[in-house]
Length: 576
Image (cartoon, rainbow, N blue to C red; front, side):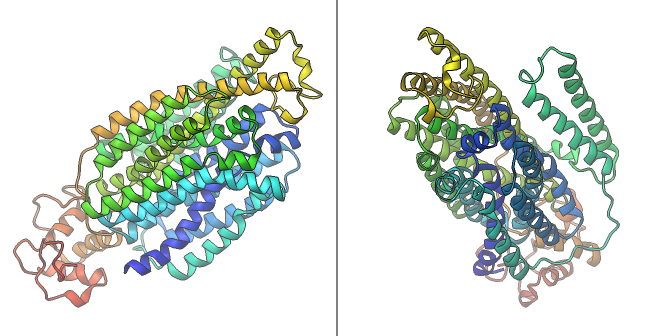
């Protein structure tokens, strides 16, 4: 595909990714008002976010595995339809229970979009060129992640918070149309599809129970209680059974053999802390701006622009530089250091900290996430065999979402506990009864600052400022883990073949009998595999085109260059 054709098809994919990200973030600055209107609590506040993240997390590896087995374009469209319908239903919710239910279905659709967009990109763009396109994807994800709160604030202040859910519907429909008209993928070879139902059920059950336990522990039941122990032990048992099933099944949802690949394993660990930073900060920055600094939802979104701009600039620039020079590791190391520094500095803020200083700290976090987040997926796709690229890509996204979901739940619980304690202490020191917060309010509920007397309002703002700083302090050490594992990633050169070309090379070898040369495999292939031998057989080390390579060239739709010598020089017009 030409650059123009790639961009045309990519536009639909990016719109799909945008609505998926918006589903998690657009409500963050509006949640205080939404939860207050629907008469919810701090637990409801956390669960409106966590429900979507939970569904996204659980479903992501399932969508990724299905993409290795069946038509990826159809799966993308199914995910988009599910997302659009759930968004409309969520917008009509009359209580927090209904809202949380439809947010789950939103998350299921968003999980498909999160997994499949990056897999399809690997089909149509080579790893070497994918850097700049990943920059576009990173920019969209960053704008959706941090710009979503701004959009949500504007909508809430102008036409009502229900439009937070309706706003993604036209974008989703447009994405559906564009994908149908511009995305053309070759059909997958017909084979018997084996679905790992046991693995899917055990993974979904184990992860869900784990996240529910983490989210509700300490609030709706004591940590050292029968309920808590039952949920914790139950989650461990289900996940252990899932591992056993995944080892034995023919088509595992998460192929555990992937963990033998150092790049995949280290990227998964690094993505956990990136997820905590990305999702956690977007959620709790909204509370800081509104409840610690007394801003409206619109202004709360505007005040997070330094982080948006940092993400946008770093993802675009780093992606372009990676494609130009083929070097990815330096940018990821710098990004992980910036992320850690930004989180540590954000743990020092208070309700009255100079906003310029807060902006610098937010920009550092944005720059760091933009350099690291999407490039973790890029290096994994470059290092695994084409037959499991869907499962590998979705697994990285799965663990990133898992980190984000657990992070939001834990940090939400910490914030609720800390803020309640700070408010109680502040009121007690001032000689004020906590009931003075107003009708229907308590130290554990989301306060409406407009109804609170001035001196008490200052106490509440100070409590939220300290509480949010404590939340960032929890996230900061995780960023150190990201630095360590990014440094440990093998510095492998980026390949120059698209996923479709690699798959065609593999099938061409099977048909044409090439692949007798078993010397070192090219970058991005698993040494010793059939696909690696096929690509190597077509690499033309002798300076002429062998029969197997002709089959490969024809299979990849480039028959016009058949008959030319195949050179290892990437600038050779015949090879290109």
